[in-house]
Image 1 (cartoon, rainbow, N blue to C red):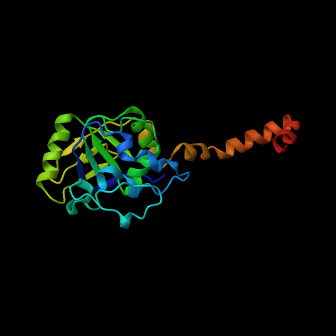
Image 2: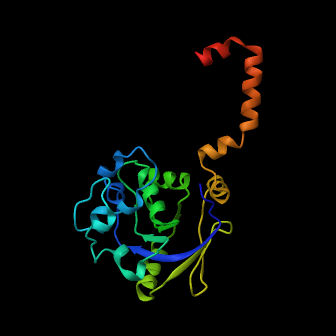
Length: 216
């Protein structure tokens, strides 16, 4: 998992409430057994004018010129500004995968659906909860100033605007630790690999018959 320390990036505004996970990555793209390749189908039904299906060449699609991510001024955006209850709906982990693989590193919103919120941290995507009035002000600034960028410092837990305003945010210490160090659940487990090997060696020394069971 990629570390998240300090990130400066262009902001794209998703001015919709209750954006659900089926809108983030529609159900037909969940058939893949791989964890990669979902970026081109992020917000597929809003992003394209033609119906999408797995394995389709993105260059053959008809983009919706009115959709925010297709507008030239937001190309290369890596911070998503959203409204309340972002990521509601089903629990699919593909939603943060698609956002990450498109290029987003962080999402700012007044609130998130719980499962999406948890899945984001586990996949290196930083969801930041800010007061609704603060989010509304950021929307106004993004719309008013092309090329609007924010700097997110996870270590100091602060978002800095181009004007130098510092906006503090809260993040649970364990989640912050994992993101700063690029550790997902597997990475956390592997840090204890020496202890795991020592335990398994000791267990087989005292119960040698388990070796035959494990190799059966």
